[in-house]
Image (cartoon, rainbow, N blue to C red; front, side, top):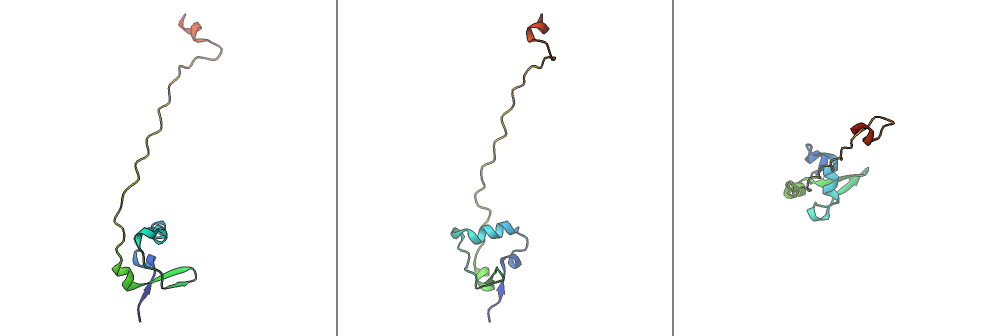
Length: 86
């Protein structure tokens, strides 16, 4: 009889969101679950052994830093710039 295992059991060091992304991405060719028990997909162990998980892949470009704020000259309340310069 073939052994059943979960992705979480096979790849313990990975975060659950990564495993979910693997399950939902059709390009990765993850084997179909053999059984679903209480909403948890179980896979045949030998099929997961034969499947190669993705290695890193392309990373999204880094987000640019926010634009620098233009500094404005602050004047005391009730004064105009012309009053301070004069």
